[in-house]
Length: 299
Image 1: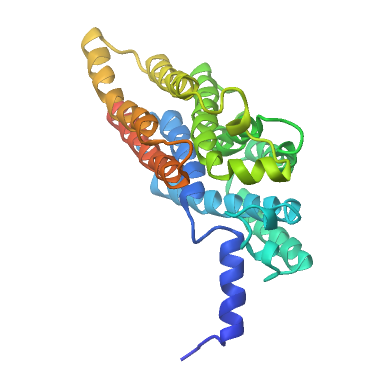
Image 2: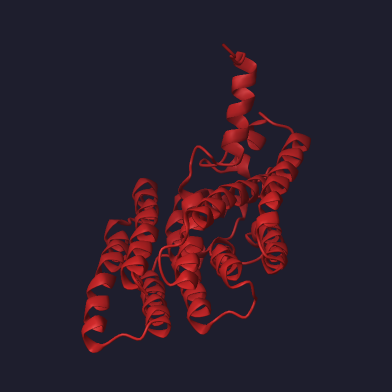
């Protein structure tokens, strides 16, 4: 039976940690917008091959994003409690190994493009550009989370273009994309509160340190914009009767409960509570997907 030595196991674990495969929350938060885009484009349940294609892509591209983030932050991470034990920060992997791994992840993700229309390839170039810019913004602006929203939800546009084979996005998809950016801005602001004290010492900027960082009203506004965008995208895509509008309103209470419960759970000065609230967004992504599937069943 094939077995790894202790050294090989440690190195494998380091690569797993570098791409955050051991912490898949972020990958799910990339995947769900893609599934929403597929559902809107198909106006119903996406085919299984489409789901599998974007699931693999979400995990690969999120892993690559984490790798480039850690490469660019390797001199900052050792001074932040939450990130000081990341593989590059603790020296478990060298910079060269990190770069090689990043190239390997991008190469693996690029193979998926052979199964997609050329329009998706053009969008993929934009995804790589966003991936490089995001880690740098925390050095110059208190709103890197806003830019992260563009990155995390970009998969929605790629999924939609994959189905429609074009870059002419409908208004419902664009509105949902913008609304999802505000969703990410809110949940990552909550997440960023885990690092407030260390970020201040190191000089890292985030929305958690902005004038709105500790305003639950601001977070509630972001979540409300997301729900409004979701409702708009459904109404624009599907002609609903008054009865069905009432039914839709009832359905939207489920993601709304999960979103606003985060504000109840969040204690800006308790990192554990912030992490718990952040993780609820996996459930939000799933519930929104279920809402879309219910609305477009038999469409």
